[in-house]
Image 1 (cartoon, rainbow, N blue to C red):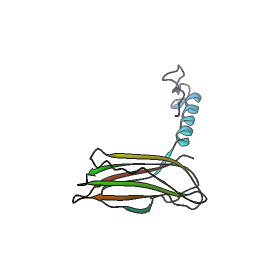
Image 2: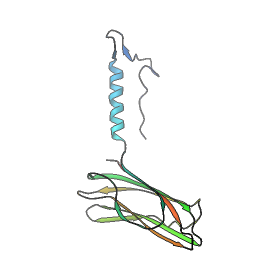
Image 3: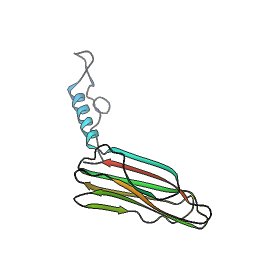
Image 4: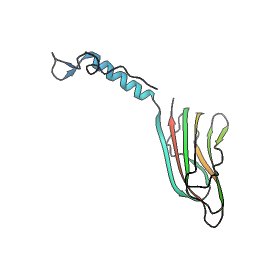
Length: 160
């Protein structure tokens, strides 16, 4: 977690505005603002997200909507929730895919609760190589006259 030095002039008795030059901030405030920008830029940047509702089938391997996937370290996160329970039973598995020298995948545990309160989530830190895509897919099963429906939210953040 990033911690910031106190804002000059608010918590510390350092002046924020240079009184000798109207409209200019002090050197201390300028340095604090520059360090704030550096800390913001060093934090995770969301590069893509997907929200799908009322899904009632498997989702084939689908590329995250990212224009250019640069080599680096990414955090992939997903959450799912049953939005309509199946008559008898249901199952859902989410799989992430990427390339790091070789094709890699990571799958969630099967979500089998089959109630509206059934949720699952997964977060993974991955290292991505050159010229690759980051993908997601689901494996869906539903038994009974009423089919299970689910919501899927996926987020991709570049860490470094």
